[in-house]
Length: 118
Picture 1 (cartoon, rainbow, N blue to C red):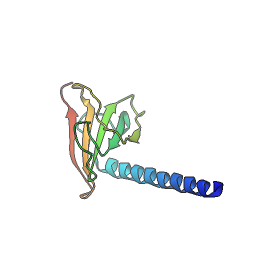
Picture 2: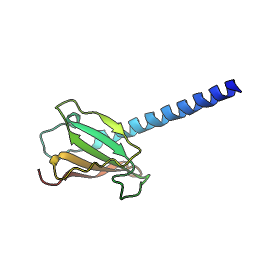
Picture 3: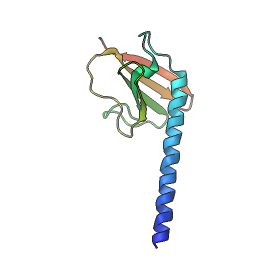
Picture 4: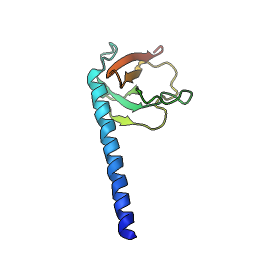
């Protein structure tokens, strides 16, 4: 019984690892296609969160990936995946906060926009 549990746990971890690798591959694919607004900032200057749901008031869409970027110290940004809504409650922020929408079926970035007025 203990051996069966060990095999099941190992299979689950392997499956989770494959899913995480798939998500990182998807993030890489998206980031190769993003054209940021003219801010003078590079992708590496943002903490970037991706997921299937933009905000709590919207349903998850398995064909769309949403990105939510918040400026950080130059060159110190990281990319991550969230199973929760990716949008944070930040009023305005201009292009120090950027939203991205990516359509998986079309393999293209469909929208990139800044978060209001700076």
